[in-house]
Image (cartoon, rainbow, N blue to C red; front, side):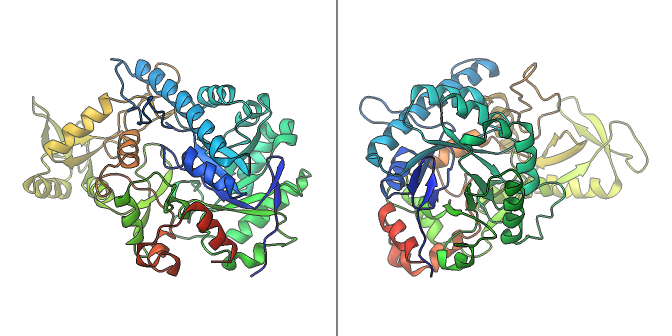
Length: 465
């Protein structure tokens, strides 16, 4: 195993080991500060970060406005205050060592406002901003206004080229690095394009080599690339270290930091991670963002799979093969199905899935009355956590809607992630994870349920394991 050498990240020489940011309080100031104190890069999430009362208790993010726009304003205020709180915590814990980064999602609600608010309120405490989930053209300008380095998260050389040509070339001096997040291996939301097959992974080496080639066109030979997604043992990446074809590389760990003493997730979540098997993490497209994402295949995911499997096309009038009426709603107004689909619908109804719900694609899904009510309540309670949400049809632009029918095949991501990150049930909530999470169960480092401190984990990683 080659020894890894420090690299310059956000203006300081540190170990090229980076804590990957995870939203809604899963990467917080405590974990980020501990990574920085170990002379690495710690990353706290700026997405709905926690604030605390005078007794150190988490302040629940409750919404009182009767309108979506009003709740959206409440959400932005929570996010700004929470981000400032976590930045201060990370700074204090770091003891001035390492680097502190803030992670934001460009397609989250109010990201530009949140980023400005946190960088203003925590001046000098944050050294870099990582940003993905979309095409974050504006993050360079916002970061530059505060003298902070920026780190776009991309999944292809083509995406970085587009960002560079659009705006990044004007702020080249503060481009601290480029995060390559492998769309087939990383946890959470993934950057698969429409031209890429989710069932046919491509080698990350080739894609990162292509990214470096594009960066060299723009004189970015020495700008580090962060390899994110699928990184577990450094010895498995030995050919990436000191590789002139790839240039300077840092390694970003998203999944392993979750199972540390400083990680804020509940004990039940940590225990579930240690029990995962290969294949338990599922690449899916249920997210209200419309992106692919990777999550543990638990009861929550299985319910969504079932919901999406119970789907048939309909027409409003008899057309072609759609000739069999299905009464809808209290008035029993019919829509029309094919003979085969009506038979399928009758089977689902007999199983208790008696509520048909319309989707934006002229299809119906069939759910129980309880699930139908839960979906409607969640859609009505939307607080605008995304810039555009297919589940609730919220949009932060224009008149506040996407102009499409709300989609019951998806879910309220804010509700479930807030729940699981604050001790909610790990079977009935969304649990993001990278595809290597099953290795907790086989890695001898975690034998007998051992949960390391961040320092212990960093020392272990440096051995190659």
